[in-house]
Image (cartoon, rainbow, N blue to C red; front, side):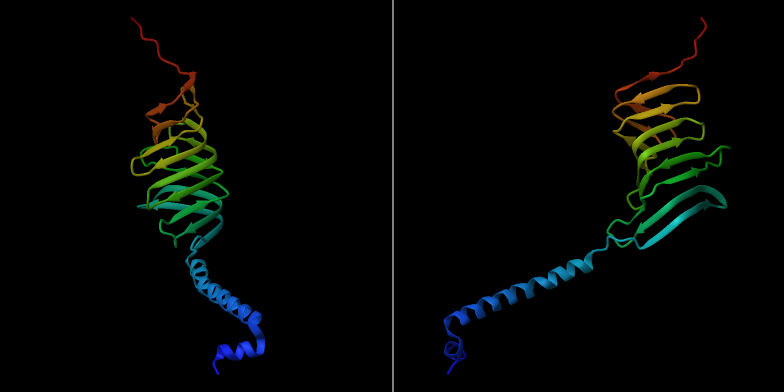
Length: 196
């Protein structure tokens, strides 16, 4: 007597159908679980290092280049393109050997990707360069390799000479603000009169 005949004798056709359906469900669930477990193990989107109330100083040849403060720094090193996140913002002074006063940067949120060389600041972004010129916006990107900054958000620039310029559709500029292109701009720019 075969296994199937034994089941028919004891349980009838209904029980056989229920048994076959439950076996198929068990196989289907059993086959999908390893994929779910593999996906869970592949999730690397968590910080590999976390710093609270951080004060970080970057030096080059004994000279301070950056003096950075942040309530929270999260480093993500286990992802394909590692990055550092400042979810509670940052403020920093950056120094140039040739100038006496430092530049200043502040943002409510920031992300740095050294591999790609891209940096992003969001929320009340404020930059004051070494000359004292000020840039304010809500979102700003910096391309480290090209030494360029850009945004498509509204930007306000106030220079040491008293110029006050607003660009409603963003800007592209050198990172020291020595040259910039403004989009849909308005404001006041002072020029020296030339004597004839």
